[in-house]
Amino acid sequence: MEQARAEGFDGFVAARWSALFHLARLLCGGDLHRAEDLLQEALVKLWFVWPKVADEAPEAYVRKVLARAAARSARRRWWGERPVAQLPDLPQPEDVSAVVAERSRLEEALAQLTPGQRAAVVLRYYQDLPEKQVAAALGCPVGTARSHATRGVARLRRLLADVIDPVG
Image (cartoon, rainbow, N blue to C red; front, side, top):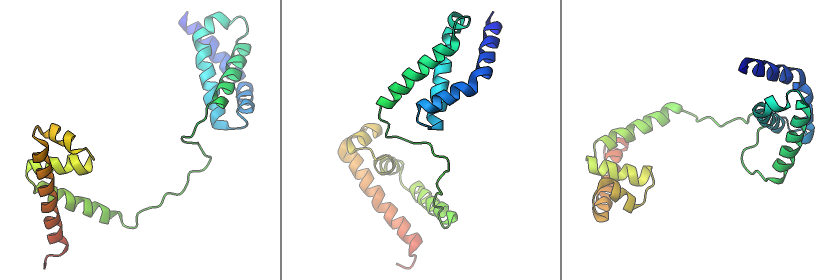
């Protein structure tokens, strides 16, 4: 029974895909990406009611779902991502090895801190947690967490300054 349902649905989609996609594209003002999303949404809804509408008018049902969904999506404002036909060129860093080397230097310097200092510095400045949350995570008073972070940053500065300027 389930296989017959799937075969009937697959046959309908294969036969009517281009016409339904054309309708969705027109409803979306020519936006191909929105049209694909709209049609997929309509076909998912059709799948769930397929046994009821398969023998009657599945195309009419999909048209109604498409029209309503297009009207609903047109009323919603979307300020997020918009798909584009061509991806923008992303700026590439000049020397990736320099970024890796810098990160490695920082990790080596962090490894030289005490566990409390390291945890306080990472939580406070890398994770950007407020002092109260750092203290709660470390299980100590806020003043102790602040002290660990301050001493850790001071030691990091010294360690990194030695690597940069070994003479000073």
